[in-house]
Length: 400
View (cartoon, rainbow, N blue to C red):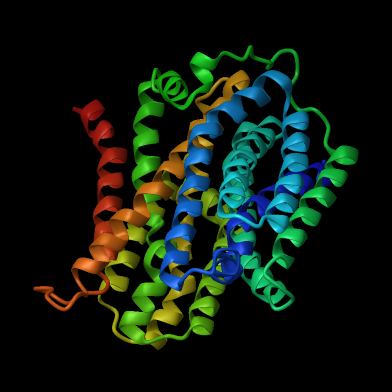
């Protein structure tokens, strides 16, 4: 069981590293391939990132439903195999279009986080699911830290080195999984695959048949949009407000990622033991409201750096919410649920950067009526308050 859990969590780490690993070399790679300016390279980089997120949105439910039918083992191993080949193709690519195809395929294979989470649900007792889902969040935090760090180091050896490293990691993990990953879907929990339920709209509709799950899914989406403010505008915000260098920005992001891993990998168990799933969920939302309010108006770079790891204390929301929703979902639909959550998160990843960077621009340009670089954090604070309303309002209605 321990080796199985290691393989599943390593798969999540590699998925999380996928974007960050190649980010440090993307500007140089874009200019190397097309001989274009940095501005044009940024546009192409944005296209590649968006395409990656769109594929995760579209294929999260499909991959999750395939794992409900054919099992977690073949889906995870097959995705890792394709991922390794995809990174090799990108390492050898000499055109933008081949890189674009590589990111499309990469977005599909990285949608296996839903399958990994479903596998965790398969092997975990109901009362321990939130804590185990916290390990998924911790693994994602580790990948969030390791990706940019490893990509930056390997980038010193050439723009293609991170791609070869990513291919090797995927292949090695596939080899580990081949020997240690058992099939966790049984004949009792196996469910027929139908595209009507596997496509994003069908999967959302199916999950939405349960009013409680529908309400929690709305909460999950609002929270994901709010929390994505950190990767969406952090580098711009800290440059504008504090004049931080790239290394200082990287250090603060690494501190945030490590803190998330600590909270979701260990501290969440203490919080769950004290407060329970719903209590932890409410605590996390309230903590985020306060953290966003402080970040919106902080003017000291030193204070911001000290607060950065503390903001991760609100990261208990996602695993607590996943635990509540998983317990309300039949065993034969765990992959479908996790696929819907992956698509919801991907949709937030598409929308949040557009919203947050637009708000940031409105409050820092030369003609802005009010200068407030932290304005996006106020938007996130409002979204977190909306999450609290969504969580508590039905309780008040039932009490009435």
